[in-house]
Length: 424
Image (tube, rainbow, N blue to C red; front, side, top):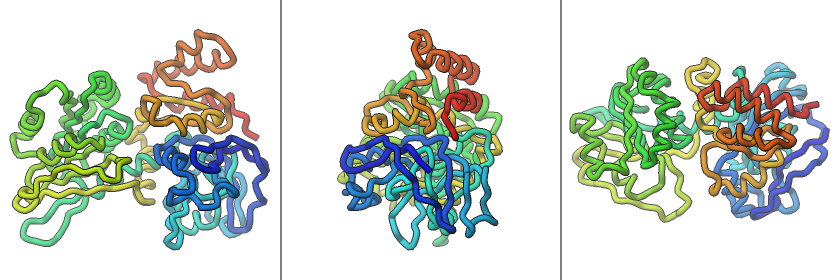
């Protein structure tokens, strides 16, 4: 079977091309990819080429398919896996398979599997490691977003608090405690707000900060104070760029006791140091943001570490259990990561978007692999429709649908765009 895919050959060398997939073996699965969201990690892989730890040294001769946040459906199952999987099943994949200690991962390391493709061959090790995950949700894009959501779920689980007088750690955020999400009005921050309010363990107080009014206003319109209150959480959105004594003001919201959990969503030294200063006794600072500078550092109050039991954790991605939890919460309608998505495109837009990702504003860029469509912001659907052209009718319909969904991408929008897809 032929596939069309975005393949990495070397540093900033991405090519969208068609090639023949091999026949599947008895221990492999043939699958159709429907959606793939683009991750900054894919940009880093393209930027580094063979120097990336997950990209093979011989990538120039054996290019890999890029993209690891994908969702699709199974179309053929090898004999080994026919009792566990069947044709028509929807799936998502945990890319960090850790097969026999290897860093190899779909979307970074394999010739015949990655999210930026129409069809892929799923190798045996994905199933062996329990990383081909059944998905029964309404829309494919939820499955694509289960990987970034798993990073958030994992971060919440990685927080910990101590048991006074014992060398025992209680894992997870402090239930019923005070939580701050600093620089939290971006796409991943909004996912964290959603999970904090609708997940299994919730804070009593949740403060979300940013320095941009527009981002905060959008966040407040998508995840409302009223919805939070209905779930037992007092939610506050605060622009710290307008306050002279930010730390004092934010601590005052806790009655002066400080926060049990502080998440830092930007690799900015003053933000990290503010997070440290906001911690109460036994407070946990979770450094969520991944810096590109390997020498990034910030001051941390070690007096409080010694006498106040403050501590810091960091996570880079979620594990398979985290991804399964994210999938189940989406299937149940408890969390909705749609607020992460700001742009839609077709497979033709995948390579240029990946290469230029840091320079494109907004949140997640979602690719539908069986359509050619320029990368387009949801907010621009109406204006693109008014320009006329090949996709005018599609953009007009999408604008109508998304306006009814509070400006968000939604299952109805996905169904409309898939009418344009060329799926065998």
